[in-house]
Length: 177
Image 1 (tube, helix red, strand yellow):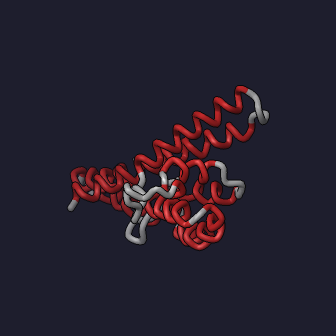
Image 2 (cartoon, rainbow, N blue to C red):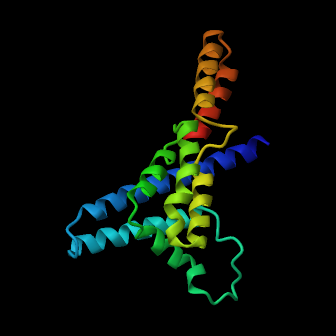
Image 3 (cartoon, rainbow, N blue to C red):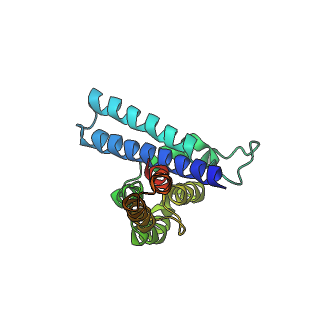
């Protein structure tokens, strides 16, 4: 069970970092002068980072390979997501891309994202919700749990129990690294 939890936290951490890198690249691309070569380059870099995020997140669910509907294609979903006009979508995702986000940020993300993304199509909405679920800390692990592990590690160290302290610090490292 410990190895499974380590793998889960490692995947979540990688996805959070990748999403954060994409969001930073998107901001950089939006800050460039429209139509310039720099804007096209920055936009292409942001799109590449979004493809990395997509490779780390869950695949499209319920889409068969024989489906000829182009709206169900992952590249079109990513394009639709990347070109979304609503900046709040990306602000909400940036809050949960941080490993120290609060449970209220998680709740707000799940309340607001469906409303903000409904114009992108059902498949894009489903992918965005799945991305948010994979990025956010679940109900079983949140920032308070990380703080408690740090406190327990300090108390164990003060009690000269370095082995237990090391185990708590390993949990912290797994959750945020």
